[in-house]
Image (cartoon, rainbow, N blue to C red; front, side):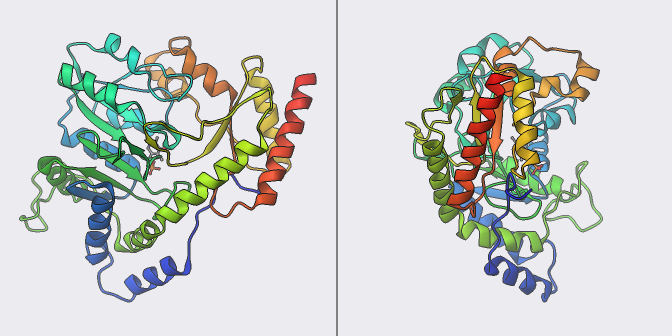
Length: 376
Ligand SMILES: *Cc1c(COP(=O)(O)O)cnc(C)c1O
């Protein structure tokens, strides 16, 4: 793609930090791991941070650390990346989907209570596209029904809700560092929590079930190798230092897109201001109006790609993923708001080094293609 959908922003500082680790004898479980964890915990204002090799691993460890069991139910959104629900299936925990709010694309808190049963143990909250979910309402429900909260903050590092960082608002939260995220470690993720037991369990499980006191060949729990190498952590330490700059740059780009696409009667633009705190822009996603079919949206995306502009659908609802349909039946129709949103969304190129001229070109191309689709 001439203008890709996303691109990592790696400076000389990250490169030098990696070289420094490579010249050291500690490539894993070394000082960069400790430093990265300490800095992320300080940033999120949580007591603990446990780094792992992906956001998915981090979410899986939360499910294990909260001791969710086969047959337990966890309420979550169908409008997310598939990992949010997959980590429940890893433990034979049942994801119970609840439809979304059409304005925010996050779980609709008004629909949560109807989905609670005696088997419900937790809510997996996703802050979609870096927009905080309505945590006041969600925490209130969780307290009333004695449910745990896991925050999938994999798209939302730096987002704030009522002056607190998302990820720190439930029992445990997870940030992710794949190259398309706001900051990257290549691959990586991190669990943040104030709970000593969750942190201890996550640290044990990521390292083959060894506890801090056991020797290398003593395994107390069924663990995994979910460790994040010091090479990755070195990248993370430098990226975290630049996070505020990166978030501001992304806010600026989102603002430019909203200006460039303003007054288009066929588009619903993402809201820039957020009354309850701060957004952390993960992707920039517009929606076509109700009268556009999925086929028209798809043809616009294909044509943008053909012209060298990265554009895509973000997301396909989880309950409509082939694996879910095959194993749990076709639930199409059950979550109409998520389904309709998914048919009409278009993610546009969004990364820190996106130039103004590129933003103009994307806006111009999208506008022209919408006009053509209107005539089709
Ligand atoms: C990126 C992401 C994850 C985790 O992704 P990894 O690729 O495993 O790091 C989880 N949930 C959501 C919503 C995400 O966007």
